[in-house]
Length: 191
Figure 1: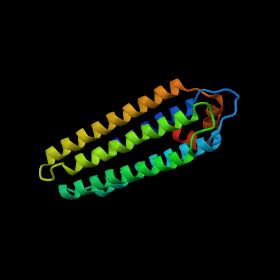
Figure 2: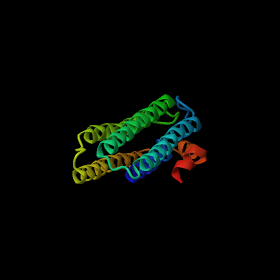
Figure 3: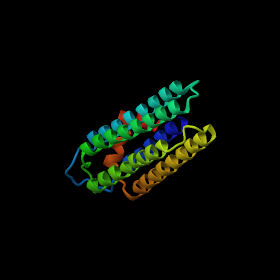
Figure 4: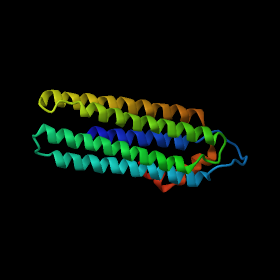
């Protein structure tokens, strides 16, 4: 599903903007996870998530190629969404495990990051419920339903990305900015 790839890339870029913006700071010492370790964990989890979603999307496209049985298409589409929701949960668990970065307001940035990513996971959960209700006996209605569902998910994840942008504007820390700009995993997902 091309929409899933677009959404995954957008969310990762938006989340990276939050991480790159960091959180307000100075040369004072703060408790928490070292910023470079935090950036590596967060960007690594986001990158793994985006790559897995893209691979799953490609596999779904290949699996559906030439398939005309709507029941089979629906089952594979629902399975794709369930996998996306599971992958989102795994990504959030990894990021939660990173703990707060050792910068001013690190706890707030971590809480808001995890909460925002929870919105992405919830978006996939809602999409699963909607996909399960799609009619498998009317190709036009099914197609229209899939398009509407994709549009809903894209809107929800775009709103999540916009919230991350606002957080990036709210917090700014040179140490965290440097950690994310030096981290190969962060460079990878921002390119």
